[in-house]
Length: 178
Image (cartoon, rainbow, N blue to C red; front, side):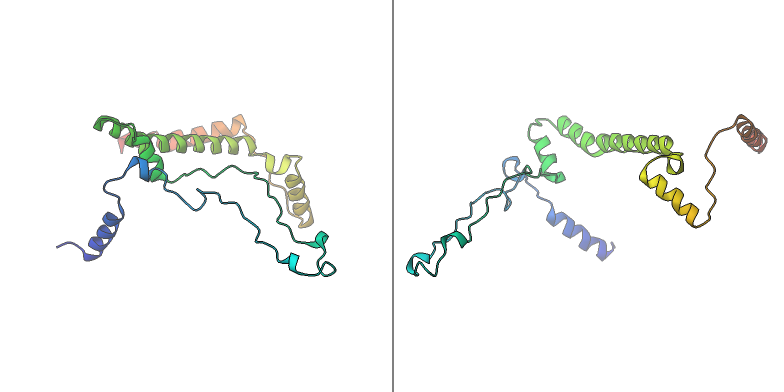
């Protein structure tokens, strides 16, 4: 007997999956931003009033807005995946697109992001206190106000490197014989 909670979750998940997606319809469903309808100012009743009551210079007029940003791209996974599958004609092509989109691209993106962060940390490891930026000056000032000692700069010395190497060789020289 299976767990009823799992059956409920499976039923909900299965019901939300579109079993027969259409590339023409499901790639980019319309949204409220799909159609642009200009705003029209309502007709004014100012003509029926006396001219000494209505001042033409003080009427409220709609301000024209300039479009500064392009439309937001549709970044939902299902739409981009269906757009990729639109031209797939064999199961092998579908499998390749799925492996590429689900495994390879996230792997490459994560690897590149990790390498970029590791490089950034290596590049900036001494810049937090020795730099000339506003943040470094503020940090040095704060250490001085609180009478804190500045941490030493990280430097590698050949003596320390040799001591670490000797330590690990002594600790793990018989690791295979245990």
